[in-house]
Length: 230
Image (cartoon, rainbow, N blue to C red; front, side, top):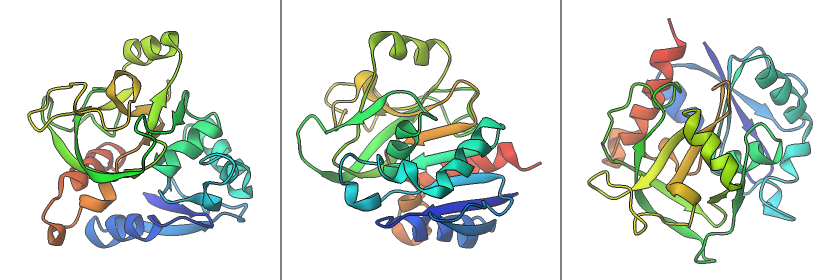
């Protein structure tokens, strides 16, 4: 299995993802520059967090038109795996690989702190091997993480098991108070209908190393690996 990490001007979590996948999880990883038109035969593409193109115009709106994204879209449409984290999630919604939109946080403030997530989808590889009813502590760092969609989309996500994570409290209870940004239905991550494209706002790559005192994020990556590597 070969993994690729896309790098845009303004990406700042690319090295975190490369380190996590290569040094911690011992996978074959390459960087994919945003101007490239070749994804180097990777099986799984990560689009990292950061501030691609300075988040000018709208988060992810410019990055969506980088040359590499044409190849990422082709890869996804052929059934290849793609996962966007934070700014990467925003880019995937702009590219229409994932539904909905990420709006400004309800507080209108940038939020950087640890929050808790509970896995929802039983069929998506990102969550299929995670413990149910458990709260995973994962950091967030975003100003536009407020997931929004019309009521029929939210129902569709619920009905099709497309919700990856919901924000919850430390006991795993999904409450209004545990929602850091105003996301509808406390949604912190989703997948597409065919469950090969994933997006989440929290940063599992920032809590994957034992040196950080929290490896809840590592378990998310291990869930992926247990499903995609025979």
